[in-house]
Structure formats: structure tokens, C-alpha cells
Length: 102
Ligand SMILES: [Zn+2]
Image (cartoon, rainbow, N blue to C red):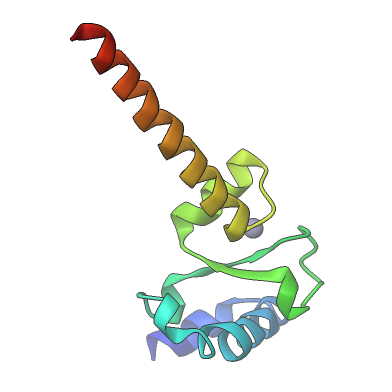
């Protein structure tokens, strides 16, 4: 019931995009997603909401989605690379400080 009324609120285009992302990405790589599909946003890598090509779509959490837009990244892959890089430099910086204190 909840899902039905939620779906009705969305525009047809957004509904189509979610259907494509659900069938072509979520169901295919189900083990990559810990939340139910309703918990995710769909991000358009080229920022064109009409481009429904599967490789233009990313299934992201609200937080990931916010970060992708705030950082001006293309999609989830770039976000993962960014976080990986940042974490690395943060750890080495901490270790550097620690070393200076010893
Ligand atoms: Zn987006």
C-alpha cells in the first residue's frame, strides 16, 4: 500500500527510470545492495534526467547521492575512489603527526 501511493506520487519519467534501475541493476547485483530498493535514490551520471540508459544510472543511498552532487562527481564509482583516496591521506597524515610526537 505504502509503495503504491509512493509510486503514484512520482512522475512517469522518474517511475520509468526506477523500473529500469530496479530490473537492470538492482536485481542483477542484488548482493551489492543491503537496503530495500525503496531506500535508494537513482543518480543520473550525466545529470540528464531523460537519459535512461542503464550505464547512465547509479543506485545510491541518500548520503552517497548528496556527496556525489556536493563534490561534483560523476557517480558512485568516482565517490568510492574519492573516499578511498581521502581515507588514505587522512591515515597517513595521522601517522605522520604521531611519528612527530614520538
Ligand atoms: Zn543525482
